[in-house]
Amino acid sequence: MAKSISSKISRAARWAVIGAIKGTEDTATAIVKAASDVLLVTVDGVAQVAVTTEKAVGQILVGATQAATETGEDVFLAIKSAVKGLVKGASEVGADVGKTAVTAVDGAVKAAGEVGADTSKAIEYATTGAIEAAEEIGSDTAQAVRTVLKTVVKGKGDKVTAK
Image (tube, rainbow, N blue to C red; front, side):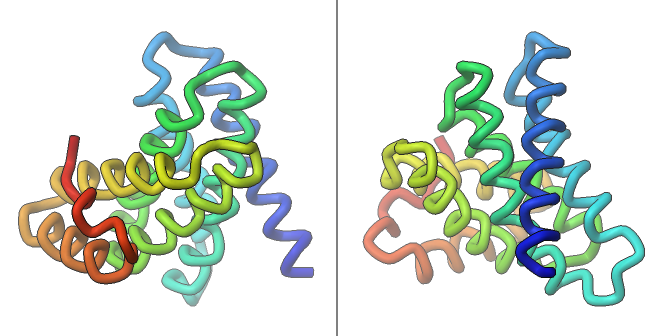
């Protein structure tokens, strides 16, 4: 059952991102919005928002990455933009932004691996997307996200800076 729901989330994210990419010239902004919207719809009316958010994040990243691959878009731009949308969406629904950022970076690695992309580069872009989103939320949030990512993203602490 859980796997079925996960694959539905991934599929919905993939189609949302494909539609967003085809409907605009600004791919990055379209992916940010699509990823955030899929997360918001996924957690709408759910009692355990934090748990649902964490579970959905990885699937949304898989869908966004598959969409980028299918449409010939830059996979790393898709990762960065999707993570940015997910972190912003997590803030909107009251989920833990730091946990979402960490889950998103982990999900980006998995998603990149599934399409044969460089996982180290995926970490860098996902981290940048998380920090950019956190900066838009507020300076305290940005600092908290930087701190948690430096602690959790092993071996990549020196890359935890916004581009």
